[in-house]
Amino acid sequence: MNANIQALVTRQIGAQAAQDLLQLMHMPTSLDVCADGRVSRAELAQAMNMVLFDGILARVPTGRAYTLDVAARGGKVMFDHGALRTVRWFGIGQLPPGEAAFTRILKPLGFRLNGVFPLDRLGMTGRSYAHIDDPEQISQFFVSELHPERFSKEFQQTVERVLSTSIDPLTPAAVSQLNELERDGFISLEQAHQLLPVLVSCFARQHSAPALADYEVLLKESAEMAWIATEGNQFNHATDRVADVFALAEEQKAMGRPMKPNVEVSASGRIRQTAFKADTVKREFIDAQGHIVTREVPGSFYEFITRDTQADGKLDLGFDAGNATGIFKMTANAS
Image (cartoon, rainbow, N blue to C red; front, side, top):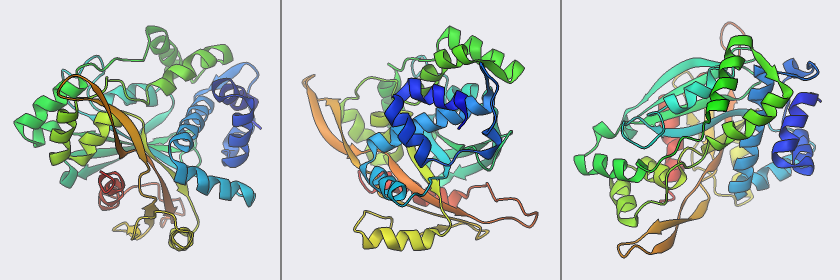
């Protein structure tokens, strides 16, 4: 086990939870060896991805139940990618607009743009980021931007109201450490211990509870923006790379789990995806009288993907706009 990753994850989530996670998840073989007291960008990226995956398991009961089955069989989860949603709009509090709030984190960690995917039916654009040191084994990021200008004026004004209270969790110290990481490719273990919880905190909701009336306005035009209003920049879903997504889907359906009816297949045929439907969560809203009320809304979900190799023998690490649009409906259907 990579001692640096183990130390980072343990301090973040506790010894027992870290041990369980390290046994559950496939570890990149490129990270078998580590330098004492010095953390590489790949190691920090892997540790962050693991902590974020742990967050999905805490929020998504169906995903956690599935992973418990995997662990009971002595299997491993191959974390393929995590997905998050952003809003490309100015004047939304302290956060940079759209994916810029995350590329400032991902690039120093070693991630580079791997593809752009227009999600026109959703008024969004998706972009994937793969790790340059080990793109096949270190989980990718699928970062989508919602474009409010493609919606009504009322919708745009509501987006501004909902997101205006957004704070920026990335501290000046964290920015400095990221700059060092980007320059040198590594930081000290102590710096990494300081930086990791700040990075993880960026993957959360940064704005205050929305007004219920505003949520309903957003929901009429975009289930995805309504989801952002309650969940923010949390992982929308995390994805397990499996050998046969069709067989897995049938197995999970037979167990009575809330699986997507159909498997999404890319235009190339090499990428096949399905998912559990989003688990519902309870979230607070502000009603017309200024009181706090609680409603059940769609939360995050757990996805599965099968990837084939390309003609050059390398794994197809791409995505497909049609697949992504279909997968995004896992939160829309629960609205």
